[in-house]
Image 1 (spheres, rainbow, N blue to C red):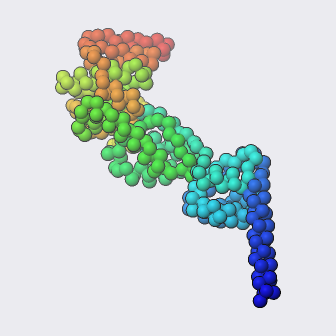
Image 2 (cartoon, rainbow, N blue to C red):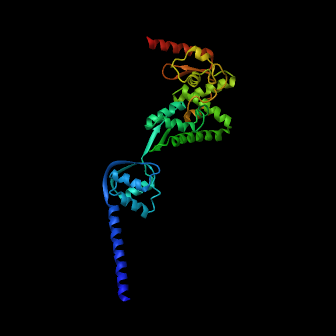
Image 3 (tube, rainbow, N blue to C red):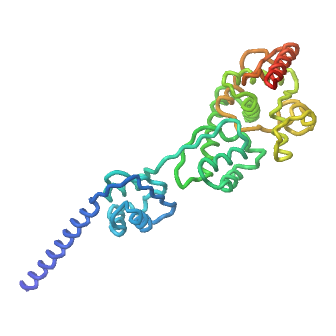
Length: 333
């Protein structure tokens, strides 16, 4: 009996020694560091800890895929590893790599969308700047509704994204940002949904009419004053948008017959605001539409310097037009 107990103690001791040796060995392996020079690793969504370990080992970020797998299980992090594009650099151990991935410290990218683009232009630019297929942006855009209903719903700004990029997630950010700006304006002014939409349409016209920040409130004033007096807006960008919507393209040359060609967006042939926004306005134009300048402007025309000459009377406007024509003639000569 004593002999059997002695052998049992030896067996337990041997097991304990083996466990200790393995633990020390595992600790040494996981603490072993590698000096990395900005090694990029893309971990796709849905990757298992096994495939992640294999990918890391193949790209020489860690020394052993098998040890990485053991480590994820021992730390109960096998299911908390996050996808994305990671950049590993410097002296890192396997523990360091695991912590980086479990925390989701992915590489962040930025994309900037300028104000005043139509939705079709916006997604083409997004595809180009993120080096992705236009098709995935088109499909994501359709999830927000018909083009007639979604024009103007995305706020042009700078947005962050991670790889692999989700077109839907980026568009959702833009959609939420626009909604927040409009919610703030609605709270300030006690607006209804109808008033919010009308402001969005006006803001889109402002965005297309001027590129100068200080002119936004003056263009806004002209729009508000014309609507108040029942005058047609007669603004060229609305006609151009109607041409895009009805013909699919615009030559770049707006003709007299275009001004007479009726569409739901032609503010020469129809009074009031056009059917829908004609572009995606920025936050500044949305606020300018809500808070026009306290001026009596009804007209404006290009002044030949990149800005506009504003007028409250037709006589003054005609004089501004003549001056602009002379400037253009001088340029031609």
